Amino acid sequence: MADFSSGRPFYNCRNCQNPIALRSDLLSKDFLGKSGPAYLFSHAMNIIVGQKEDRKLITGLYTIADIYCCNCGEVLGWKYLRSYDVRHKNKEGKFIIERARISKEY
Image (cartoon, one colour):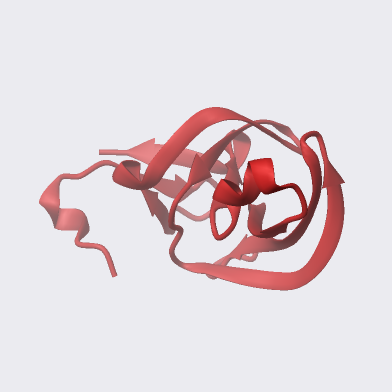
């Protein structure tokens, strides 16, 4: 569990304010989710990982699992479990969280 008293910025579930990710785990703001802009994170917390499924995304075929806020059940994005393209193997184990689903806290 992260220490939120340290003053480090983090991202909350927009629906219930549950902490979801640390700013220091943000890798890129250059992604798209179902609802628009999305961020790539190396780690996420206080989430539930759903059923894995193969999904065709903009950059190819992946095995992914939707991720949900563990407090309110809001769909936040997905976790990359497997890339079928060697050029995108770096995404495996990382999280896409949609910008519309989170808010930044300091």
